[in-house]
Length: 424
Image 1: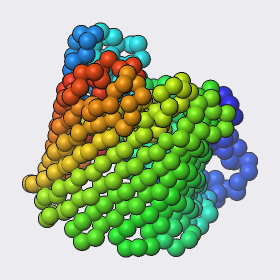
Image 2 (image 1 turned 180 degrees about the horizontal axis):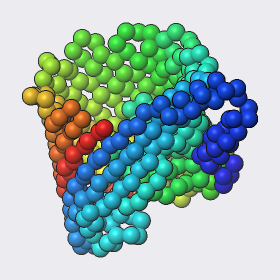
Image 3 (image 1 turned 30 degrees about the vertical axis):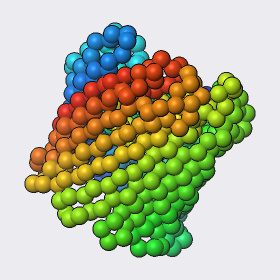
Image 4 (image 1 turned 30 degrees about the horizontal axis):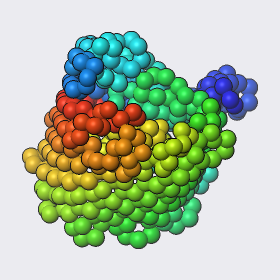
């Protein structure tokens, strides 16, 4: 299905099922069907967000300021013959829109806040559970694997990310979770869509060791214009021993299918933390994302973090989100440490990052990019009401970084958010 989508097909199938039900089912089955439709569950959420961003770039763009409201309406039907349906409608309304939304509808002379206004069906899928210990989702859906490092929903942004496709999760083998998925369209945070010739996902998790989880994965991306055809293979281990927690993952990436580029790159992430008590924890980690291997080859590419929730990693100022798409030519070596404090129902997290390059293939650059200090305070204010304040300060350490083409991390930046989240 090159230009058509699974999403449209599932809506047509669902409509046909409703119209033809009286002709193909006995009366009791018809009653059960309509009970499943009418006896479902509604839910909703409202997220009010204010964001301020000031990037000290040579273009002299004005700081960005945005206030918006995201509303989501959800409905999940009851089960009928082991099948249920879910739909999620979303609207984002910008109240204050003094920013560049990267879609052409806002002010290009200001800094970027990637929250374009609009409405869409964010998720709509059928959920099949008639096979024992197996769930099949067919339609538009969010796909989140592991810690979002390669595949996530980019849930921090107001418009998030979803895919049109089918996913299968099976738990019939003791202590093993098997996942397989296919998508032919990405629905982006900019309310645009990217058609894919095919994105195949295979993931296996073993949970048989108490307190530990081991995973192996293979992601095969066939892009429509053959400029991002990639095979990514990896392993991940997370767990906790007494007070000590850890997370380690490794991935290797190579070109695949009709790729017009040459890729042979690696990614490594490691984290070690200690929960000193119920209120206080500390940790430190390193993230290594390999850059371009051959400075003389225009076709050579760095490691591509695919469809990750990049904001979660490598600093909240989003200086290095170019790892999605593989555009961080000189790679990234991120050393970081964090402190988490929980007190009176509030959670405060402090993070420090030191960013270095891994390669010197562009502009002769082989030095540190910069460092960053991040702060997050989040608190449940009432049963279904949560508030947060978040701040990121990125400090450029080497001005030559800003002069090198294709190199991120060139300019100082301050970003501030405050949000109120209500669920019903």
